[in-house]
Image (cartoon, rainbow, N blue to C red):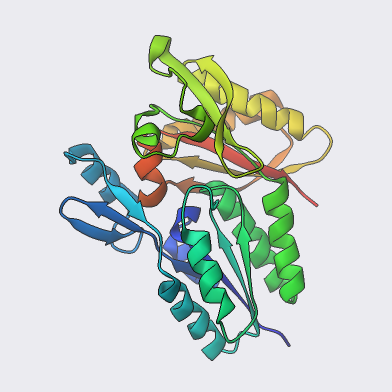
Length: 283
């Protein structure tokens, strides 16, 4: 019987305990502060990261894992008896992580299917969950890859940031670069387009309206088929509660799969008090 390994990177913003319990190998990105370099979630948990961010003189930078980092994990899984690997990652438009994984896959001992989700954070988490479910149901390499690709291709990520400063200064604003979000308390709802690039979804006034718009879109998209939802926040669990309440009020037909705490790699660009939802229609 085939044994399929699943690999991800730390931008999925899933708890390390969850990944370990579900037999998923995580390769961390690196976060560079003035006082040193830290492995996302391994050496720098979310709470510790945001405390450092608050006190930092200069904004941190991030660095993708090397091909050697991925090669070591692929080798480990092959040594453990895996006959194939599905490697699931954030959009290549924002990071070189996909490139590193792809380079490592080319020389791996077993077949590695590398998936660019074109997404980040909780949306990647949903893709990983889909892959885990397919693997645990006895799926072979093709089946696990297909489940992951279905989730990635049908997933929508909508999120709002407390400020665009971190995104702009970090050079990751994409097509949202020109938004004057600081004027009149404008809170743009952002999304990712089909090329994995951030773009504006809707401009609204105030955080509450942003949550309402996210919930309304999710409700509209769930009208014909139930959706699987993941929620995210960066140091703002009360916003997750408000977003869930907004989903219920909007009449969204959904199952809540995961609530994610944004980590260092994504938090470097999202900043504190980001909130959002990812979802896709259940097959």
